[in-house]
Image (cartoon, rainbow, N blue to C red; front, top):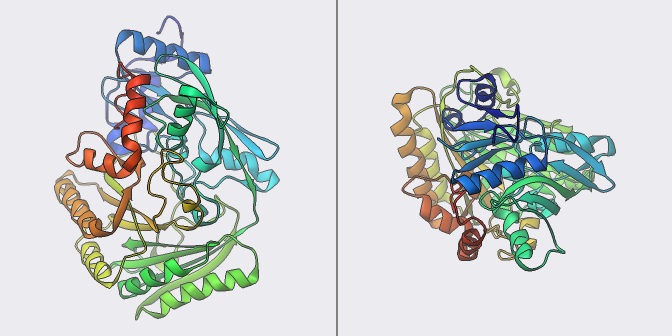
Length: 458
């Protein structure tokens, strides 16, 4: 491989190897030891890597945005697309994005035309998120990121390059179905075209209130119009250092003053249910980088620092994340149980997020693409975070106990947080892909019989 790709193959203990691992966001992934790092410049380079891997019997992982827990594996080849294959440019009402570009780069390319693609809440995410979902502030009004894919160029484990779209037939049509919701086990996306939308500024209302308003939030949020997204975080903030808080983050995708007032009134109804109203502010900004972070404000209401990717040598903590979809059935008893859980969090970094879905998400059927769980009302990312290794076992137990609280209301699992090697992995895969799992596994057996991409759970 090094002979065919001179200057692009970086072995352990070299600067290129260390630099790539040092920029991986997920802490556990950054500490793994791949066999080498390859930094391709073209689709032909990616083809060389996968063809060689298939012939020689080794595994490959892919780093696009670098947020995924599965982008690095011990003893596998790490294919770092972010170094060179990171461009994005607008073509009419579509955008063409290279496989190593982030959603932030895509949105920056569209900004001069006031166009967007709905994405998640972090600008650093790459195609691991684009092709497996993309839940964010515009999901209710515009749907998932993956629902905006027009076509995809992908290199299969055999090294064959395919162009997939609604016009694909035969095996390629099956791959087009699979890519939209479950791309990583099937190939490496080297470029894609996505539909865009013309949008104006987004209105945002943020407040910090007491946990006593959580039952009201569970009642009010499912009633808001689809132009409104009412998200929340249960966690801790230096704004109220002695107790956990409910952070409410309400957005309105419409610029109509009447629609904004509807969103504001819904947020006010939740606020009125709490005896503790610590903070509230509203603003209007450009999607996505012009909006506040989806995290509680700090001391004296200071805006949180924007999420940034680490640099080589930065100190790293540990993270155990899960994300489940739930229906509109959360009630007072769940609220009480979740309040107890956040009060018992082992570290103040632990948090429970509520990303409201519904609306346009359900306009596509569960079997129309590989993405399962479109009838949900919330995606709930649950994050156990710690710096001291001694807190690890308690954080893992806290996360699992919190998932148990939600079990009776869980309708699916967001596949971006499914990792191999855990006792719960198989059950998570069944929940993540539901009735699509059998079809996906048959396709994988056909297209990756040698397990080149087998580090990705399916």
